[in-house]
Amino acid sequence: MLDLNDTFSEKLNRILDLKLEQQRNEQPPRDYLGASRMGVTCGRALQYEYMNTLKDVDKGFSGRSLRIFEMGHAIEEMTREWLRQIGFTIVTHKNGNPIGFATAGERIKGHVDGVILEAPSELRMTFPALWECKSMNSKSWNATALKGVREAHPTYAVQMAVYQAYVPGLAETPALFTAVNKDTAELYHELVPFDASLAQEASDRAVQILKEAETEHLYPRITTDRTSFLCRFCAWFKTCWQIESS
Image (cartoon, rainbow, N blue to C red; front, side):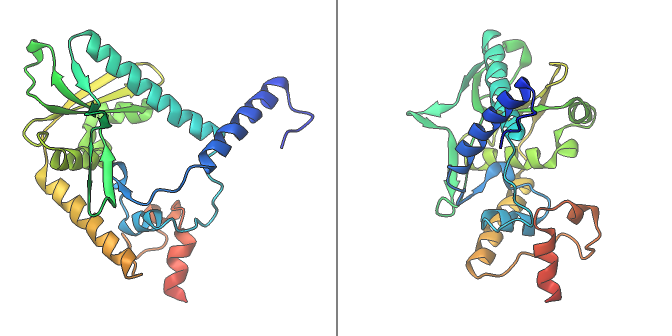
């Protein structure tokens, strides 16, 4: 609702936010586990997400959050074009369809940011190779550049491993991970070899989560300590812990 005391800028932004939120609310909820979510730390939280369980306080995504998501997509497109300008061939579709995978009756699936077919020869890359691009703030980007994607962002590492495992031809070559600093436009690139054990672990857990959902059982919590940092900010904290005490 607009406030008559809002400034012109605030009024305009609120109108924009309301439209974005309306468009988001009109989208049907996901009925599958996405590869980008398979690395979520707590399996039970991932099950709640898959089952579209009502959050403790569900305000939906704010207009600002939705703008951030859209910026991420735009940055990905820009970065893809920058790479193409220096000799990369990156494809996102095959036979008119987005490149990706679907398994377990299409209850586990995802689409890649791109598949690299060519790159400057001095990079000595092998092909085809998965390309994954993420935009980050400075703090997150600095951690990634210092520690590498596997340590700084395990969820992204799982996502890449799953794509490499399920999209034909990608398991034999390292993926190219690109991180874009949204604050400074710095770029970090890392070649990430296929981690078969990580992909298998994530796939096994995802299948188990689907089975638990079918039988109305809950996947084990990640901790037995309800005061854990891992639980405190979970969207289903009250829902999860009240079940046990009832």
